[in-house]
Image 1 (cartoon, rainbow, N blue to C red):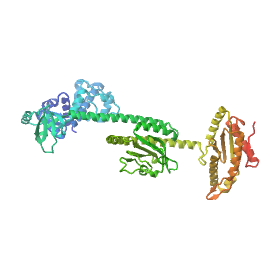
Image 2 (image 1 turned 120 degrees about the horizontal axis):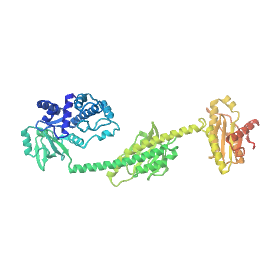
Image 3 (image 1 turned 60 degrees about the vertical axis):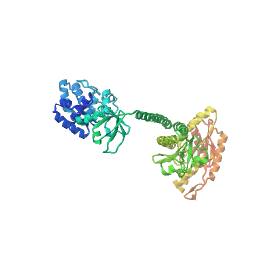
Image 4 (image 1 turned 45 degrees about the vertical axis):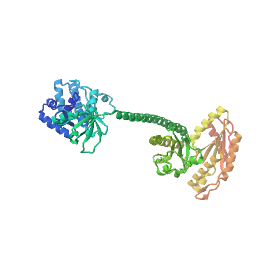
Length: 592
């Protein structure tokens, strides 16, 4: 854009701030340019779409011209502030110097200048308002306060200026500018079409055909060529105001509902982030989703570790409790098959998922829970029957939009909890056998000692070791030895009580913790394990491996000590004696 055009638009902007139209003589006086030259430039600006110009009435800015004029005025007045406040130029030199510099100012420099001057809102000389900035100043609150009431009103009025032929049917406008000679102006005046008159388009006509309008209740037809020279400011009819108010009310209600939903989901996300296990999730999800969708039934299904089936972990509303409805294979859901939301708006048309043995009579959807490409589960929601078809469709549309966001939150939360569980499990379990490791064993015995001391009960500790395990590895190989350790771990899990704890102490040594067991009971349990392990069948590469025997040492709390190290030492010593006495036997520790 040339410097000349920017200067003209700045002057027109300045004039129209005080009066509705910038006359040719006013512009000529401000720029000190001959009226004929001004007229020629105004015609060019009209052709380019920056202004609407009539030789008899003057010029007004279009929305495009308004932005340019506003920007140049703002830059000019920012420079005036800079020259006067920072460089200390006299007021007489400020204006001329600012005019020379304003065309070289870019957005980045303007932003820096605005920030350095701490967002001034008046220039130093005549105290005129600096127009509001249209740059992206981020969180600049001050820039939002720049615009005065008159700037805002002029901006709205000029940006809404349109040709009368653009008005829609039953849309009204106030005549603001008429382009034409005196003869045309008198002719239109006789018809009542003067500046300030209110007009309304009564019927939309095809292009190049007359425009039908109404003025003060009287209908008339305007030639299209004449209509193209009449510009109006849009006016809102009472019906339009009522419709806009209703629309605004609906939007406000939806925004309030959306804020409520986001608040609930934010609270749910915070709670889920505090969960340590998957078992802690269902109550949180049930409460949150009931608040979010009070008119919906549904269930949350999670994929099992073997990825062969999904099982419900949470249900709400009237979702069936039958087993067939709550356990199903992944292939029984269209949403899981397709990897995206499966929505059924009409049960007579859409395919129904096979896992729904009693399909809901209202619209419903199945939404896969996916995180990092891994299918974690399924969220199923169905709407409760509604008496109004319109309400039903609006509700299902809103449900679909919100449930997608809800499912994203839920998927990430489930993935994070599963990752936490996996990392926690890896830190306390032996990677080969899956039994608890030595670290967990130490923490558990300490905890059980405190509990036993409080309840005045005993704890049995069995240290078991595989006899001749080194020879076994040398003969059959370490892979066969690993297979034996895995099978032995499974044997211990099967044979002990649910409250007992089995740990791999190291190598071929295992420790069994029996809370609440008596000395006699611990010895009997050890003897039972020693006999039964001889019947353990282990196969490697299809070939049976020879049976094994166990040597065991027993320590009892508090008989053999009250400290962890003392109990482990007693059990280890007893185990050593069992080895010395010929292996395949149980030896109890000596009471000090």
